Image (cartoon, rainbow, N blue to C red; front, side, top):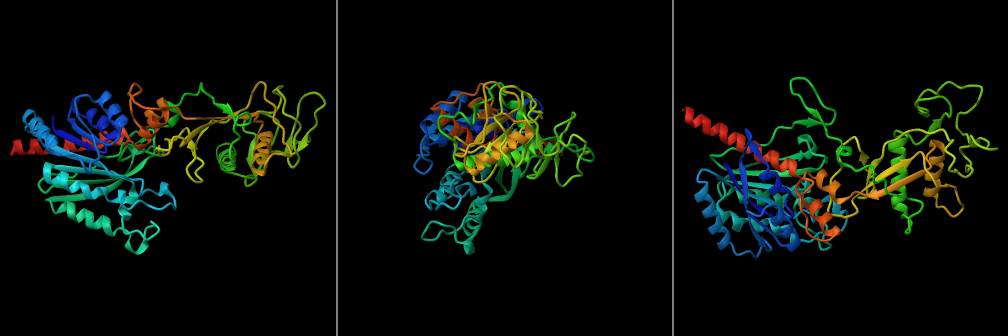
Length: 459
């Protein structure tokens, strides 16, 4: 065992799961010996999966460290050659841009200051910090709780220097979990500290967005579709008991433009032939035939007649004779104006907001669905329905991503136990450190320490 971890702000166990599954040359190389979190159900979740660790249900600011120190000494007696790592996923809410323009809580922004007593008591060989990249902008707030631009980064620099006074050198990087094989493109700031005679090591990426072959071979980012359950299509956006709000409808429309129309808001649709029948107006038009079916919705049943795209179409019936196109679902992000990502890409950052992501499923064949543009529809709903008519879509289904999907997106195993309500479990997943990146950081350090040990032996 090369590394013994103390996991502060451990939550339900993202970091700990990465550490506990880390291996070097096929052997387990690290162990989580203690963890701290104030949330009882988060600790209950952590304990259910990592029962060998010593658990503290306590605020890190008030925890009596005597029991922790005694436990560390015991573990060191079992693994005398192991190094002590203090991991802290510091409070990020009041730094993150996900907070938007809301006031920041000045007190919670000072939680990093409480790390010093742990450093003094434990004297760890390594300190590893995870946070949002905006942590680097830590500075003074004005009377309204808003960051003062001229003080941006002042407190961050001061804090870094104060940690280094304990005998550490440091480096930091922003790492994308997808670059290490995760199902999310979550970016986080990692600050590593090491005693002056010990190395600072960042993991080497194994993946990139498009994949690459050459001097460095990279696998393609993992698509989130590998962990989504497509048998659960969700509920029609038109038959929900509670109508969708305007902001959500706008995101859905933007998603249709991006993921169905290929990002082109103006398009021509040809309703004949086979293959790709949708074209951007910025591209050459397809062959114009004598049937004049460009920019028409052709109702191929009964006495139906072609309808201009600037007019409401007749009712879309259950008789599936519209010219249909194919389209993949996409994942919609409800944060701000973000419309989401393709299922062929890693999911965007999972947040603690329980409504963070939806799966959108355009339906090109459906039973018992009839879509009609009504006078009572708002402007966005009319746009959505007009788009559906042009593209032959007869329904759009939507659902929130489920806990089993969210767990796998964040790197947790399918059988990982979470305690609490559905909302609490989703919060724990969103607050967790992505498992894959935690494992990569741990393994990179273990490998480097082994190399240094072998060099000493050779000398």
